[in-house]
Image (cartoon, rainbow over all chains, first blue to last red; front, side, top):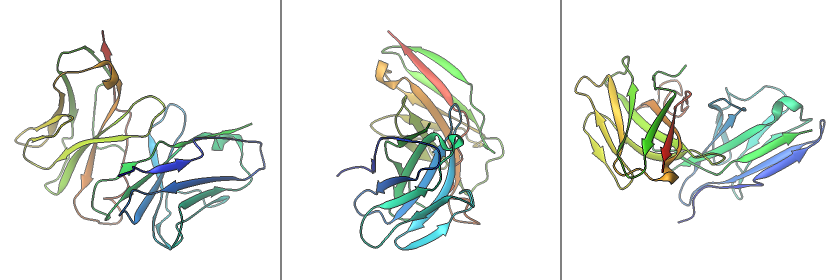
Amino acid sequence: NAGVMQNPRHLVRRRGQEARLRCSPMKGHSHVYWYRQLPEEGLKFMVYLQKENIIDESGMPKERFSAEFPKEGPSILRIQQVVRGDSAAYFCASSPRTEETQYFGPGTRLLVL
Amino acid sequence: DAKTTQPPSMDCAEGRAANLPCNHSTISGNEYVYWYRQIHSQGPQYIIHGLKNNETNEMASLIITEDRKSSTLILPHATLRDTAVYYCIVRPIENSGGSNYKLTFGKGTLLTVNP
């Protein structure tokens, strides 16, 4: 049973470019959560999605950030017009139901030059 | 706002038991205690969770005090690969305003296992 998959593992972008981060949940999990970890800080919740629905995006910056979890395919976290402050590790987690344990992927490390 | 307090760092000798404490004095009766760890440059790894009773799995044991205000994660025979930041998280059982899916990670305890 494969765990949560994320790609790419490392992503380098120049300021103003777009970053697309992908997350495939564990088999049988329909709930996906994105967290961000800034350097030397703990993980912070960004957004919670179920298939085709955004349930809670309260932790996501209002501008430039968006997330989706289509009926088919992985969940996508999209960051438009990246700035240096977006450099961080972005982790995705999944669970079979809201109240159950979240399992994390290996993360995508975004570096904005 | 982490509802838990953990020492910033601990050392343990390889092969010995590692006992990681966590204070959660404001925990309520409908909140779990969860433990995750994060090995350098990897994603958080779920370890164990409990409500009232002590729990054990293949990775660790969780001892929760009777008043539930603190707990201890025990790695019975620490290895070098157990060097990581360990996070203790309080998590509501039921969803109330989104509180049970927004995991709150504090600074955790950096456990260093020495040869």
